[in-house]
Length: 384
Image (cartoon, rainbow, N blue to C red; front, top):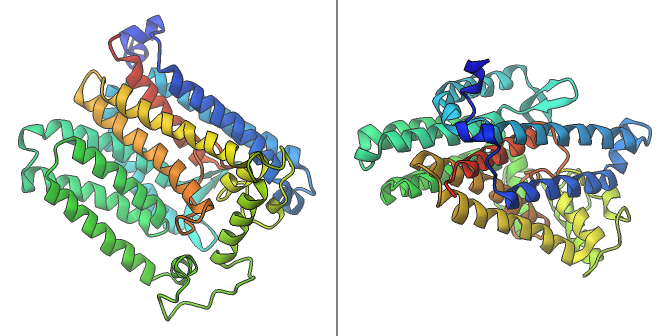
């Protein structure tokens, strides 16, 4: 029992307060997600459960519960203990990313998940958390020679691009967000700007190669820019449900139909036309039902999370390790939110990224809860 208690900081045993703003943001996003998914899930329920929307509501609610349990547990587990095990977590994640390509389930042309019971387990969700933790550890250890190529840049780059590369083989969007998150961590850790720039250049080259090798990804950019970029890719059919242009167009219609105040809860029309309205385009359904005001209010939660994560938690963290981890967790969560919304309003090409704690999902929900829990644990250790 005494050994188990060691993973909890001493002051947590006295219920030291955490950042209430971040906690409330997590709870509000979870509640919004339950309402939005219940409305958007009608088509999926009709196809897979004979119209039983309550079945999927229960499933989503259970996943929200798991996410909140993860948030609670990791808000109490000392992040220093997680950091000590981060290298092993990352190695395990890399192995799972290899195994998923062999034993995983293919969905939508991508093989990126295992099916475990009612959950779809994506190793990339574990990998991105593990990478944030381990890069934070390396940045702390190597501060005395942070500008060294052989002692700092090379080992960090190997871990980063091994992880990002394996994720990017099936999910370029997630790989890009992970890379941006760790690059900002490196910037805060006084990493050399030329080194960071070289990481960015490598990322652009890698993304281009992934796009050239995948007609589906090429179609997304073609539909976004309105021109044919890659001559080898298939034509995008204007009214095909499978076409990426169709998805974006239906999302724009949902935004327009919502107006300022929305059609009302549960009254979405576009949920019957949007592919995966409960996941990839949940923001479009929310703005249709709750209007521009509802969409802006939802994005405001991510803005507040960004400011609390940076200006309160990271800035006042008790040590550099807490600073780097807080930056990584905050950037990761808010980037997901802003990119998801950017796709819905047409600012970005279709990515398939979920809205944290809102979209219908399995391990994506739990990973969001874990990131928030770690962020809350850092906030709990700030001296007040």
